[in-house]
Length: 195
Image (cartoon, rainbow, N blue to C red; front, side, top):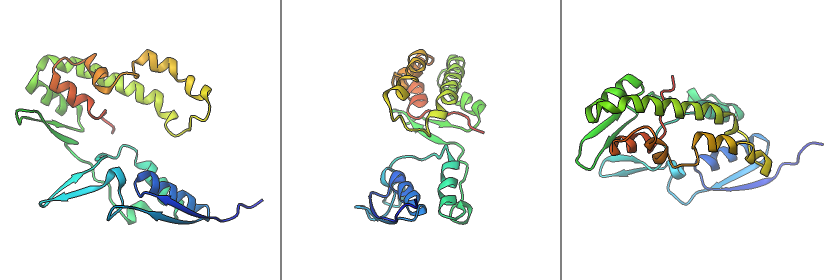
């Protein structure tokens, strides 16, 4: 039996709202999006103040294949609409004294930044990166699946306990890094050197 087309309203044009609208339209539904702001973005909204631009949310795209999938569903090519540009450094992070830390794509460059603050922390940072990478590799297959039953959620729980991922990122980083500013650098966004 063929699914009947419906008129559907999506409230909000953040990543979730836009991707839901694209998926629904690709299935033949008539979709209308309502957004309270002057332009789309949701948590990814970009604010402009006194000539400067500020990201309201995500600044780094770590899963470009998901964007490609949405464009493909719409019968389009992402490359025809936008170009993804590698950022290096990913971030420039300032401490309370106005000193900055550049978080680079290249782990060795990031380690040079760590040495400016505390050379002894490089070994702990390497362990932190290994831990985060192991967690990502284990959990990634679950990120594109729904936890629709209690059992589907409970089966990941032993790994959550084993890896300590029930902690905050700051708490996780604190296992490996002692310098407070470097802990904050490592924990505010779990950046791993994706090639």
